[in-house]
Image 1 (tube, rainbow, N blue to C red):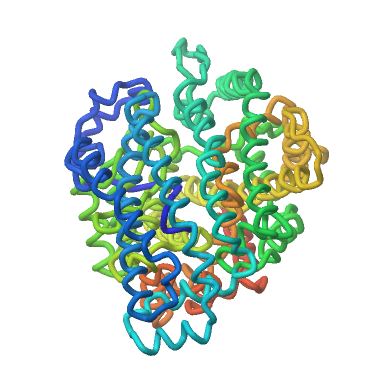
Image 2: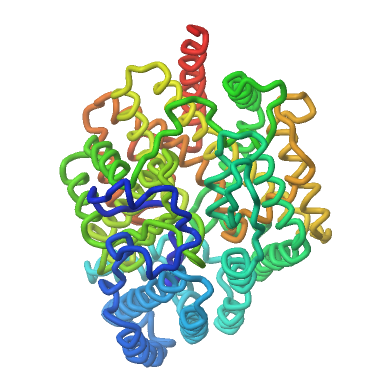
Length: 631
């Protein structure tokens, strides 16, 4: 990721015990006004800026620095001192701009319908674009300095060593860097490229008219995204079908709007690919982190070859649910008593802290501290951004986590997941200079999914009851579905839609529906009778925000396989495994992501991590079948 805009998308952070089950009783938090939620369940953004006025004052103070940096144009190769002075000023400038952006975006996420904070995010985005345009001379000028000269500068001034990886990456991508004039045009176009994602976010979170449905018990539910996430797991099958039909009908009514937004986003990616001369949009994305395209293709190929194992899981799900035909509306339902337990926030916190202890006392202590100091925004409220993420972009502060906690075990898993991200940011920010503190998405999901594995270990070890163990095992297997197979399914769709537009083909709602349905049918074995997919669900692509993040989703799956290998070493007590992992979390972007993982003993250019992951999945399925067969 670029230091100008660090966006961490994911899920989790909390604040510690102290919660009474009374507060959590079946309240529809998604329908609550934010003011009615206790402050202890909200993040404290005053750690970034004490007020909106302080934010505005800081923004006004920072903007002139761009003009000061502009004075270095044409001088960057003069001497090691000049180069170092410029890079330090630029780094500090970007650090402050990122902090400003973090505050504005998180304020807006509290209530996406709030036009004041929409204005703040638009203002900072415009300023970013203007700054990027002014500093568009930097990459062309730096890449034009011969490598030998840069090496000589680094020898002459040891302070420049921290920029070594930055220079290496710049030289590696030299052929894709354009002239100063062209770079300025691309920078100016940045705010246009962001528009599809911004429009999608506002519409799908704040302005889309979601339906209200009446469930079998007479309960009326306003079916926004958060409520859909909750009620799609309801035990009553007819209610699940009501929820699915209403939710996807609502999306279908706006299919052309969603299609136009996504098509525009793909075109923005293709603009970058064409302007810089990459052979594909995929290469334009993966090249930034020096990840071979083959890793992407290999993942899709390996998953398609492993669909029989996925279909085995679906068969187990069908058997547990006791249905003649497994339907897509059934897949979120556990069907196992024990999974209907309420995991109130305090309980979830305790589980996450205890599972973190496997990574050492220091690691667990920071996690506990986070729960006490306003790092987390816990519950859904009207207009709040859906889903969850961890944002560690405020370098000099601490990470923040957005949650939409609904008292389910999945929410505890999400909590552990996001704490992985938060601790990755915390340790990288603490141990690296700002220039190397950011880390690539390719390794980001390793930290999050490894925390899920540690949580799995804890809850399984503490469970002797077969029924509860069955529930937990199925929850783990559901994680294979959502993180490994579902994200690769998304990755395959994302690749196809980019390839279609690169060929000059249209990307209408009907085309998107057809492409998505074909992949969905294949993954879920619809034509072979494994899982029935109603045609209505072909619109699901419109619900996935990650399609606006430019080849992001595949990294969930690759990271999942990497974390499987690492977690096995940690759980098995392999000497040095924890130390290597903490070093990995502390390394930021000081090396390329593939090399960072190799240092831990995981080589993502081979099939070994994937093979270990599938072996683990089959082991869990064997354990499930042992319990089922007892009955």
